[in-house]
Image 1 (cartoon, one colour):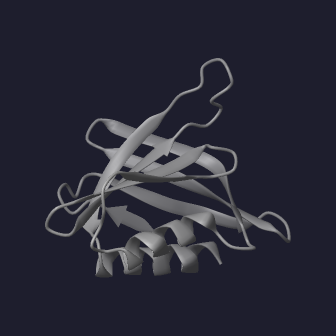
Image 2 (cartoon, rainbow, N blue to C red):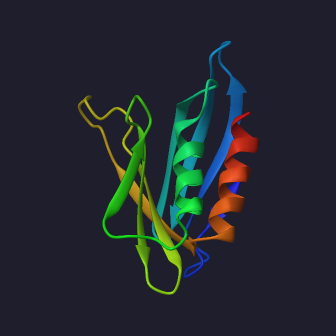
Length: 134
């Protein structure tokens, strides 16, 4: 599944290569793309008992009027983090950050921000991510 930025179609995030790891979790890859940037992390874990990412996106969609400050979510392994900020005119910026192997020598990090409409597009994104992870 591809999440494209409304302001710059060359920036986006792709969730792909999902597979059932065991009875409790699925694993998938996350790819970030922007001009001059391509990054990928494999083996990102989502728990079947309820994906935190889906719940995070659902909450953002429900609060489409926005609010002050930044909201964040991350995987238990902290290799994928998503932060959200609302801005005027009903848009939300989702910054997707990959930091695999953060404790290893040579670890790296990369981020891409996608801007979406806060209401219907966020609800559609949450539904698409739910479908992808289940």
